Length: 373
Ligand code: KG4
Ligand code: ZN
Image (cartoon, rainbow, N blue to C red; front, side, top):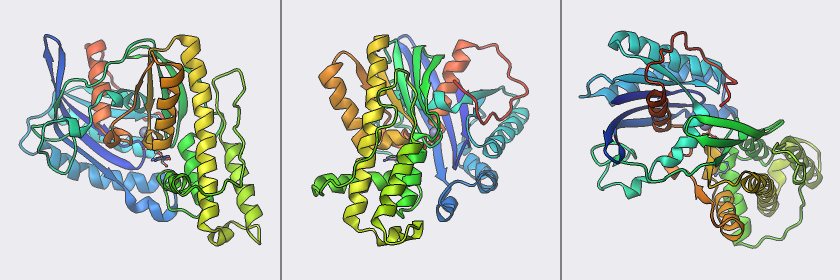
C-alpha cells in the first residue's frame, strides 16, 4: 500500500510518500519521498501569520509534490492533516489533497495532527537506517524500517507543541482519551513568548534552551525565582500564562524603564539565568503532572511528542525521573528529525486509520482548527 501524506497545519509545508508492505511479523515501511519546507517568512514577524502561511503553502505544495512524485506511480491513498491547526493553512492541504484524489481516483483520509505526533515515536533515527543517504532524512532506498519501538499499553502521551499541551491516555493505537491539558498557553507558546520578552528571535524555544544550557555549563548565579503553576493541583491540567507574566515582571525589574524594548539592556548573564529558571519551572510542572498520571494509570509506555520534545533538558529530566522512580515504564521520544511537524508522522497515522477502518469513506473533509483526539 502506498500512502501520500500532506501536512500544512502551521508553518511547515510537508509531503511524504510512504510504502507499507505487510510481512508475516508485522509491517515494513519504505519512505519513497519525504520533504519538509519550513517557512522562514514568519521569522521577521515574530510569529506565524495564517494568511502568509496559506499563501506559502499554496506556492510550495505543487513544487514539493513534483519532487516527491518524480518517477513514482500514483499512491493508493492520500492522507491529509484536517486539524488541529490554523484553519486557512489546513484548508490549503485539504483542497490540494481533494484535487489529487479526484485526479488519481483514490480515497482521501483525514488525519489528526496530534495522533501524528504520538506515532512519530515509532520512527527510527535516520542514523539507525542503512547508509548512505542523501541530505534529506527518511528518503531513498535505504529508508526501509519496521518499527524501532514498541508501544506497550496502557500508554500515556505528553504532547507538547506550539499549540498544545495535553496528557493523553492511550489504550491502543486509535483509542485516545485526554486526561489533562493547558488552561491557557501551550508550553511551546510560553517558550516563544518568553523568547520575545528576552529579545530572542522566533521561535524562542530552541533559543531559550541554548541560553539555559549555557547557564548550566557556566554555572551562572541563580538570582531569580519563577513560580511552578498548578504544581500541586489534583487534576492533570496545566497553566503557563502566569509563568510568562512572572518572566515579564522579572524583566521589568531588571530594566531602568519598564518597557519591553529595554530587554536589549539585559546582560547575557541575566538572560541565561532567566532562561534556565524558566526551563526548570516548565520541566518541574511537566514531570510532576505526568508522573502522577503514570502512577495512577499504571502506565507501561510514556510517549513525549511535539515540537518541544526537541528540548534536551526536558527529555533528560524525564529520563532520569523514570529511571529513578518508574523503572518499569518505557520512555519513547521522537528522533530529532521528526519532533517538529512533518508528513511522515501523518502518513503513519493515516496507515493505522486505514488498517482499522478500511471501508470508511471520508467525504466532506473540513479543516477543524480545534480538532481533538
Ligand atoms: O510541533 P511543532 O513543530 O508545531 C506545532 O504543532 O505547534 O512545535 C513548535 C514549538 C514552538 O513553540 C517551538 O518554540 C518549540 O516547539 N520548540 C522548542 C524547542 N524546539 C522547538 N521548545 C523548547 N525547546 C526546544 N529545543
Ligand atoms: Zn505539531
